[in-house]
Image (cartoon, rainbow, N blue to C red; front, side, top):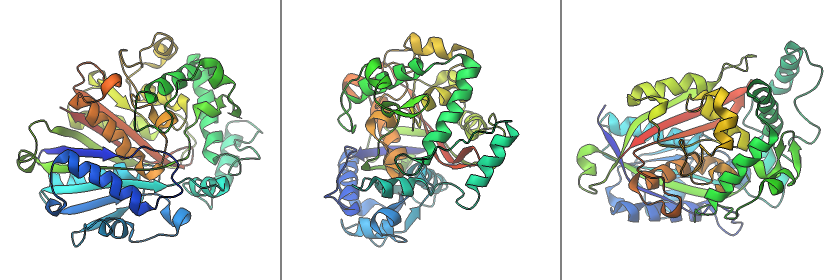
Length: 407
């Protein structure tokens, strides 16, 4: 594989844009990315576009890349439409990286977008709820609970109606970590406070307001221990990146961000809560990059809920499970802490437009490694990582992409 570098990255502010089309979202993010890279769109040799639910939300299916990019004058080149739940754009990045690394292309565009907000929340929740095995999910969960020796149901009566069905599943998994490591609801509230503090410093974040522990705990119960301010909000968004071979990158920049590892994996149906895709995929990413968890200077993790942040750090080996409560209490995850996590504000504050989330994470790491993150800059950041999961298969993530970058 050839060396591959990011030469440009851009994104729009994640938020609610009922007046904008998917063409608008893509155009704005790609225009910013081209400007950041300092190259003309005519130099792009291929485009990889990730999105998860535009068919359900907008009616546009099948040729999403061609429709959105041709509207801004990018056409004729090979275009690939990638759908992989919330990991759609990070999976698109993996495919582009593989093609450039293999010598198929020297310069490729990667885009992620989503229009997920709708005045009818049911429509959004229905779109999110399709990222499961529709035919078997309820029977599997019933069997799973029986094997756990419990007569209760993971799902509550309002799942898929007033909240995403994933929230009940996340809550159940979170409670097992509370029992195992002594984590409390207040610990998760502290993570949410940290995320919103970082988001307040990020001009691309949907929510840019700090909150208190009390506000998080009293923001409305979702499914214990989750409260509203611990859960990622529904929004629209788009982000993009341009990657090049080493030789091509040298034409555009003297400060490339190198892709040290790009790995994608899929879940499997299992009743074992300890057998997770994150645990299986993490070692592959570290091995490919030639480093260990201790070498990560900052990480953007898929915190669809605030507890997911610390759970992911434990499963990746970045924070030992037995140290998790202390790590939160002592501020290890803060911008100036031992292991800064979700410096962008994470999904909880920045927002979670599912098809754009992965590239939004990559954008943050690029800014950090360049030293361009402003007031949320991590000191001397050299190695950054992104963790982006999507969907649920059994009781595990269905899709996941991990990336490691170096400056």
